[in-house]
Image (cartoon, rainbow, N blue to C red; front, side):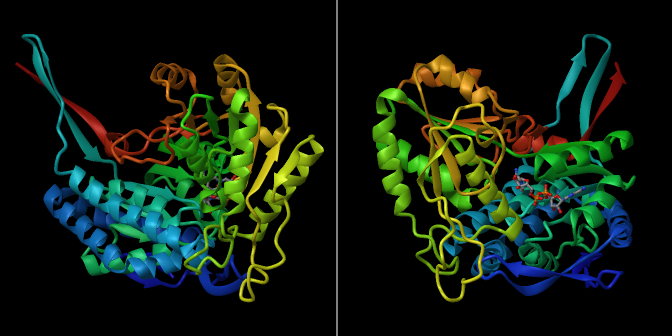
Length: 477
Ligand code: TXE
């Protein structure tokens, strides 16, 4: 059901899509297959809610956002279970990462708006200037399936915190937690029309959102190909756009690294959420002198990851989100072999992880060695549990390898040498560089990609600025 003007509503066309549980391959609910008419209704609701919401005191908006956070936290087990069933991710991951982060997103932006400062510029003897940052109107927020509530709330929270109203479109593959969020918004007393959620496919709902002249701000996270379409739709209408797209992130291990933590970190960065995180380090580069040792120990550790039913507490590797994504993973594993790669671990779908999941979309963590740096497997985003490992000789060489892709989202370096860390971090073309860690997220830092990984930054002040219009007021002395 859509959520428009504070009400759960049927899509006007009366159509629904099956919502398939990745772990079983079977439909377990239905999701509204909405279209442009539903988007129009949502725009009307968002438009009429805007004048009041945008004029509310920041403290009042803050209280409502904090209430939403409390309610998600109160119901966190329900949210975590829904996220696990909808995406195939292990319930323990939904519990420890996805849902707490959604809570944190609302708390962070719900309090950030209480601490903003306005800039003032004094023009010597002539004028005073100050900057007003005002909400822009209706924001369109489009998110993917890999971290459904985590990423959607990362957009909703700043957009409405600063006084915009919003139309959100979750991925049609993973609509469930967005539905639960709407219930929480009503209970928290969010005024009708401030947040509207329209479910459906990219072409039927996403495209009308990006094309709608009254939706002047678009924040999108998803694949690079879709990102291009979004940019094309928004450009002629001069919309303000933020695009967070794919990655092919390097994970670099120098010989002077603390090997235990480099291996543990690399196992996580390679296979968290079955490798379906845009920040996953899918290209591992290891300095030659420790290459063999690293590969042996890495494989030993990866082989211990427990693949299974996502709802099983012990499962560390769940299901791939859908059949198309599973086929894509298989395609790249075949391609890697054609390109000369050796499957050092995994590479073949398991028979079955248990009875319930006999027809689910599972693929084991897969490690590929022996590939040239410039081959397709090493350049294209797979978005699954597949990593390649490549040796290197020198710092300059590995910087070249790291930058030799169209993407530029994130990177990780493992070294005990601080000077080297600074030197390499400066030269790598990615929006985030982690040193001796991965996925450590401080919500205040700028977050986003370079090159084909996107345009703009989310997080902290960047998000508050993105969702507002800076207006200079100049007063003569
Ligand atoms: O994502 P899409 P898909 C990558 C990953 C994956 C590939 C495709 O490599 O294999 O993208 O995945 C909506 N106008 N990532 O097809 O299509 C869509 O409904 C407006 C990386 O699932 O990009 C969904 O809500 N919106 C990634 C959202 O866009 C449109 C996360 C993202 O879906 C639209 C996911 C259109 N024309 C996939 N077409 C990351 N970097 O986090 C689709 N959508």
